[in-house]
Length: 172
Ligand SMILES: [Zn+2]
Image 1 (cartoon, rainbow, N blue to C red):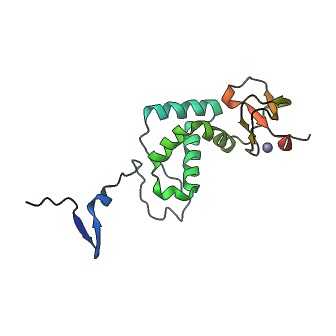
Image 2 (cartoon, rainbow, N blue to C red):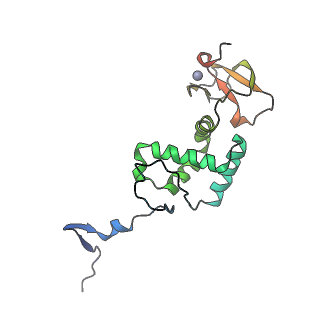
Image 3 (cartoon, rainbow, N blue to C red):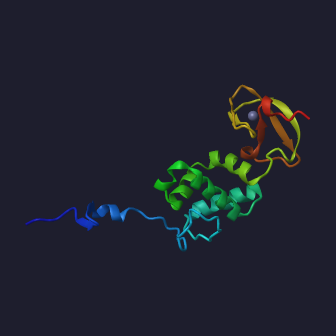
């Protein structure tokens, strides 16, 4: 007796295995997709996020002193700007974001805050004990190199410290 493993469906003369139709779908629901590529109208999206991601987003938003919604919007705008967005759904993008939080943090910070050096009152030349990234140009500043630590009124947690390379050190 035969068991048909792969069903074929006719779709306008094109044959396609049924499995393709059952690819994972984004959980986000967007109302009325018409014209979405040609208009800049803002829409409300609802999506499910894992609890751990929600905590991370809230904590990061608190660190950056911005509303969670601003942060999520920045992440999604980032995703839309990425060339491979077509292969990723919203949920996957948010999961990746959680996985890469450490790297995303600096990038997002610059997006949601106008000037990463705004509350710096002095720069102190330091010899780095760990690799950092320039807060301005994102150049990698390696362990053992000299860089400039931005001093702020309120001490920042380790992952929020601001370092700049010599080239990005404000002149005045
Ligand atoms: Zn720099």
